[in-house]
Image (cartoon, rainbow, N blue to C red; front, side, top):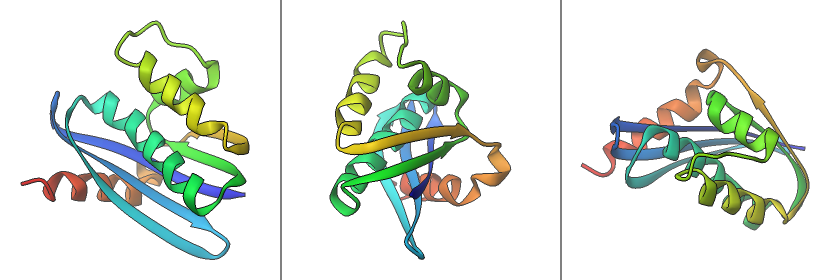
Length: 130
């Protein structure tokens, strides 16, 4: 099972945004700081999951993925597989599509203090754009 920590951040809301992804797989740690351009903080959180799925599709196709996020909106939306927020609907659809490449996906909410690596990476991704 692959452990994935994701976080999104934005400087302003909306503002310059970044995704932080920290993956623990088979004894190796992977870190990704991905610039996202301008979006809201919530959108950045969704994009972090999407980008992590894209990375895992390439590196760990078919594996079981265990996501951890400090975004209750993202966790609740993915767990319920539903949102009536029009801005989040295409993001949820992208997560559904990317998720088809894996045998199973879990997602769990974690507190901010246990998601520090992904948070630092998301902030680093913002700084890369200035």
